[in-house]
Every structure is written in C-alpha cells, then in structure tokens.
Length: 101
Image (cartoon, rainbow, N blue to C red; front, side, top):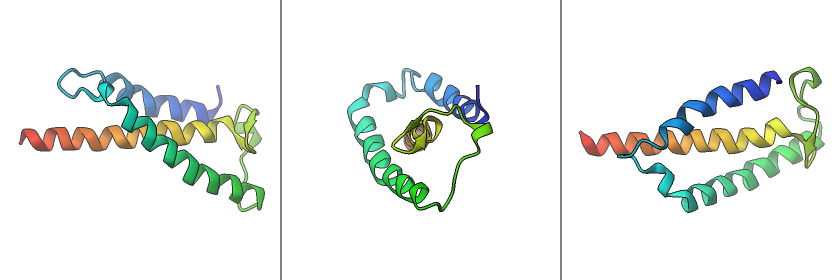
C-alpha cells in the first residue's frame, strides 16, 4: 500500500463505520451524498487535472500506486471521494448533535 492510500484508508475508516450509527441515519441519505461528492469531484477534480497537466504540481512516484485516471493518480481521485465523504459526514454529525443540545 502506498503512503497516500494509507492516509485515505485511516481517514475513511472512522467516519464510514460511524455513518451506520442508528440515530444519525446518515447511510439513508445516499442520493444527496453522492450528488454532492460528484459535484466536488467534477469541480475540484477538473481543476486538479488542469493544474497537473500545466505542471503546477506533480505526485511523488514513490508515494502512489501508479495507475492514473485522467492524468491523476488513483489515490488523488480517491482523495476527492474519501475526504468529501468525511467532510460531509462531519458536518452532518455536528448538525445532529447541535439539535440534541
């Protein structure tokens, strides 16, 4: 496993597990979740593709698997999916517990 994929794995494991916490019911709202992640992937992923093609930054070959999607390492595409999920989940948890107070 690459360093990048390990970071993504450890970022995802907690929120993914906790998303099935019954009172939260986060897992029951998949359509808005996927729609939000899709827009994030298109907007920021598109910008990332553009920036890497222009040479604004690159990825250390030692820290990634190697396969690419649209000129981005698989881990970079997964970053948009995983971190978007974690961010949306965190927001929903804050809203859930704020209502409880």
